Image 1 (tube, rainbow, N blue to C red):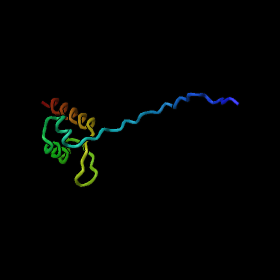
Image 2: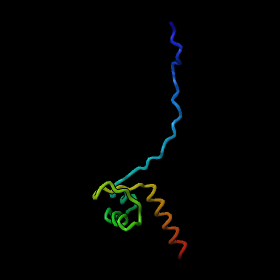
Image 3: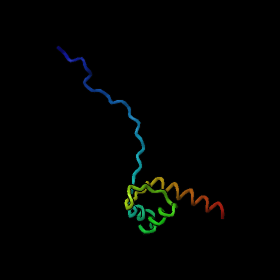
Length: 80
Protein backbone atom coordinates (compact mmCIF):
# COMPACT_ATOMS: atom_id res chain seq x y z
CA UNK A 1 0.00 0.00 0.00
CA UNK A 2 1.37 3.40 -1.01
CA UNK A 3 1.97 6.09 1.58
CA UNK A 4 -0.30 9.03 0.70
CA UNK A 5 1.37 11.53 3.00
CA UNK A 6 3.31 14.29 1.29
CA UNK A 7 7.00 13.58 1.17
CA UNK A 8 8.01 17.12 2.17
CA UNK A 9 5.98 19.03 4.67
CA UNK A 10 6.52 22.72 4.87
CA UNK A 11 6.88 24.14 8.33
CA UNK A 12 4.40 26.81 9.32
CA UNK A 13 5.76 30.32 9.16
CA UNK A 14 6.89 31.30 12.60
CA UNK A 15 7.26 34.92 13.57
CA UNK A 16 10.68 35.55 14.97
CA UNK A 17 10.50 37.36 18.27
CA UNK A 18 13.31 39.85 18.53
CA UNK A 19 15.44 38.60 21.35
CA UNK A 20 17.85 41.23 22.61
CA UNK A 21 21.54 40.54 22.39
CA UNK A 22 22.81 41.06 25.91
CA UNK A 23 26.46 41.97 26.26
CA UNK A 24 28.79 42.48 29.19
CA UNK A 25 30.20 45.85 30.21
CA UNK A 26 33.59 45.21 28.63
CA UNK A 27 32.03 44.43 25.23
CA UNK A 28 29.83 47.53 25.39
CA UNK A 29 32.80 49.62 26.54
CA UNK A 30 34.84 48.53 23.54
CA UNK A 31 31.94 49.35 21.22
CA UNK A 32 31.43 52.81 22.78
CA UNK A 33 35.18 53.41 23.13
CA UNK A 34 35.06 54.06 26.85
CA UNK A 35 36.28 52.05 29.83
CA UNK A 36 34.19 49.27 31.41
CA UNK A 37 34.17 51.34 34.61
CA UNK A 38 32.55 54.20 32.68
CA UNK A 39 29.87 51.86 31.32
CA UNK A 40 29.10 50.59 34.81
CA UNK A 41 28.98 54.13 36.20
CA UNK A 42 26.58 55.18 33.43
CA UNK A 43 24.40 52.18 34.29
CA UNK A 44 24.44 53.03 38.02
CA UNK A 45 23.51 56.64 37.30
CA UNK A 46 20.70 55.65 34.91
CA UNK A 47 22.32 57.20 31.85
CA UNK A 48 22.13 53.89 29.96
CA UNK A 49 19.67 51.03 30.43
CA UNK A 50 20.86 47.73 31.84
CA UNK A 51 19.53 44.39 32.99
CA UNK A 52 20.55 43.10 36.39
CA UNK A 53 20.69 39.37 37.08
CA UNK A 54 21.90 39.62 40.63
CA UNK A 55 24.01 41.99 42.69
CA UNK A 56 27.13 41.59 40.51
CA UNK A 57 25.76 40.50 37.13
CA UNK A 58 24.82 43.29 34.73
CA UNK A 59 24.14 42.94 31.01
CA UNK A 60 23.33 45.50 28.35
CA UNK A 61 21.03 45.34 25.32
CA UNK A 62 23.15 46.98 22.65
CA UNK A 63 20.12 48.27 20.70
CA UNK A 64 18.56 49.81 23.82
CA UNK A 65 21.80 51.51 24.79
CA UNK A 66 22.32 52.95 21.31
CA UNK A 67 18.72 54.23 21.17
CA UNK A 68 19.12 55.76 24.62
CA UNK A 69 22.35 57.51 23.66
CA UNK A 70 20.80 58.75 20.41
CA UNK A 71 17.82 60.26 22.28
CA UNK A 72 20.18 61.85 24.81
CA UNK A 73 22.33 63.27 22.04
CA UNK A 74 19.29 64.79 20.31
CA UNK A 75 18.09 66.34 23.58
CA UNK A 76 21.45 67.87 24.33
CA UNK A 77 21.97 68.99 20.75
CA UNK A 78 18.51 70.56 20.62
CA UNK A 79 19.06 72.52 23.82
CA UNK A 80 22.27 74.13 22.61
